[in-house]
Image 1 (cartoon, rainbow, N blue to C red):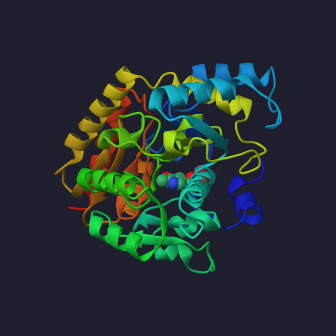
Image 2: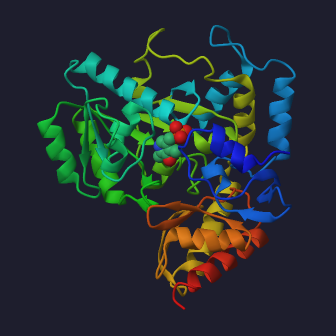
Image 3: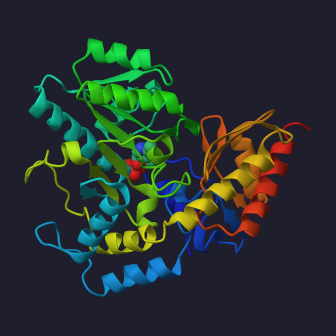
Length: 392
Ligand SMILES: *Cc1c(COP(=O)(O)O)cnc(C)c1O
């Protein structure tokens, strides 16, 4: 076999700084590399493999569908897409869903829906979207524009116009931007993921929701990373007691296959007409069959387990040697090391057989939602050991 790393460097565009590991297989929360070394995976393909590697139920659901029909285009009806939409709306109270293939695309749909709703109700000049500084909404030119972090914007100008950025936690900053710009929507992640696992304050989120409702604006919650059980609630907005008009999600919902969803609430449910949005692959029957298997298992018992495991990680790492702070909710956790960088800790963990992510200055943990307690404990012990070296 030719050297995988060499081939990758020669032929794959230079957009990723990969870790020096080639993963060849996995089961549950354990990944195996090409040398047979096993790792407990605390990153889950960036929060994607909700039930870990090669989950049996998910495989049966996907393969059964692959044996019937793998793709039809959106010119025809299919069963998995319709059933998944019914389940999503039933569990959230949202009214309609649009399917696409990624988080960025789900956000593109959310932005189109908000702009069209504003154009219909107030006028096309109400196109601005207020997002929150340090947020992350994707890599397309429009979702980059929505991302309130300058360093992502450099070199790709001009981006889609119509985005302004408010300070997290400051409702007056939001109100001021809305007064200065004719605004269609407020858009945010309840817990900023890529921004360093930073939860927004509950009061701030509720104030934004009330303000948007009073002003006839829509509220878009980006649940791409926080959604589908990750925070111990089905969607993170449920922890904040708000009702968004538009919810985008992706990552974990497909269990490892690409699926993005934009959910439309009552206010905006009829905003689109045929031709207003579309996607060739969106709602692929195999992806939707897999998602049905995932979503149907995200019940109260699993959520309670996610919260319990999250609390275990919090209490095990908070105040531990070499740990500055622990942030997040459920099984979406940021650990800020002292005396060394997050990257240093991730490297040490990898050597000791645990895969972690980073987000800004934090080590980011997004383990499988069903990670067994003994594996979680083992991984946390290793993370603890790696952090402690920063204080030594
Ligand atoms: C990952 C992420 C996205 C982008 O999702 P892609 O599937 O990579 O397009 C958007 N928003 C948030 C909050 C994310 O974490």
